[in-house]
Image 1 (tube, one colour):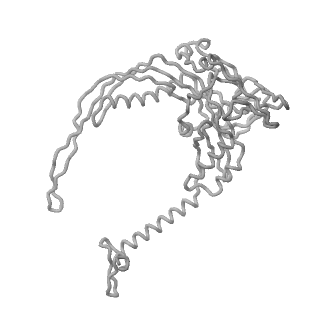
Image 2 (image 1 turned 135 degrees about the vertical axis):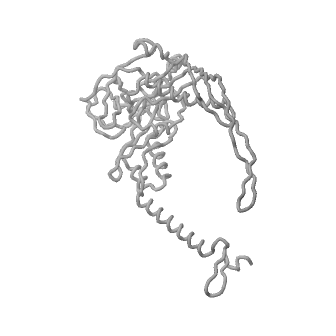
Image 3 (image 1 turned 90 degrees about the vertical axis):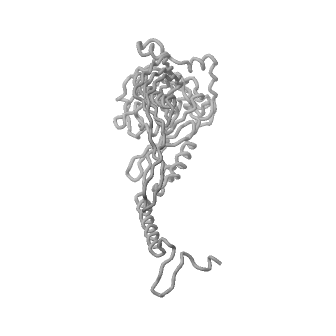
Amino acid sequence: MPDHRFPCENCGSQLVFAPGQTSLTCPYCGHVQAIPESAREDVAEALQEIDYASAAQTLERGASYETTRVITCPNCGARNEFPEGTQATTCPFCATPLVTATSSANRQIRPTALVPFQLSESQARDAMTAWLGSLWFAPNGLQDYARRGRKMDGIYVPYWTFDAQTDTSYRGQRGDDYYVTKTRTVNGKTQTYQERHTRWHNVSGRVARFFDDVLVMASNSLPRAHTDGLEPWNLSALAPYRPDYLSGFTSEAYGIGLEDGLREARAKMDAVIDSDIRHDIGGDHQRISAKDTSMTDVTFKHVLLPVWMAAYKFQDRSFRFVVNGQTGKVQGERPWSKWKIALAVIAGLILAGIAAYLYALYGEGGSASFDGGFSLDAGPSWLDE
């Protein structure tokens, strides 16, 4: 990222963005400096959609570009941006030490907007430890370890958003159920029952839908299961990109380009279009034989979204946890306690044994006979008094 410094007016230290606020705070003397409010026209420009065709055909039209310094982590592949003057750092995604001598210049589309962090590090850690505490069969002491663990990293993760008008023609089949009364003999008795059949006939039609802000993470440094689990994001909170919001935080350069991003967005759109087609076909069952979708008015934005991350080792294993820096939603790699699982299995076997014993003792009829010549009912007689 370009070198931006925000010195404290009182002590000269670097000011950092205060999550949930519109200000920068000095971590040493506590001085607070307000971030100037963006002009209305700047907000409109930041949230303006960029024409995809223009940006894809030429690098000089339709989008603003910038050159950043990027280190690619040799362990997880994350492409971390860092400011001038940094000599060494740590990958926030996997805690691998990084040396800036391995950095390279990277020319990319400049983000136009971001969602500022709303949760502080302590709030994110509280959300993470509460999530860990809700996990069944987690090792004892995991919450305390996480609470005392290394500092969480605040990262602005790159995303693409895509808009598109789609029009789809399709061919398929509609299935309508009907029932036929049948008879069968069971234990010498004749029974009637309903047998379901499906009548199929060919159909065709068209569906149209406008997609607004289809979100695609432009990075491969985190498992998709984790980042998808952080959704939904409130994109109405997008603010114009300002270096002030990044002070004290890390931002990642996108590793998934515009064309590949649209391909992923198209896959998300196709799933919704399939649902629209099935709804349009109607009936009890639907088959889609063929479809042809045209996309027009395709636009995009490059935005940054806030994620708190913890990457540390517990009992010689590495775990990563991510927290939505806007909502506090948590996802992560959960550890399992072998002892707790073993005890649960043993307890289950004991309960199954007790149930089998009681079944053998009382039988299906609820009583059992003993050699002593008396009958034991399913419960003591005084319960009926």
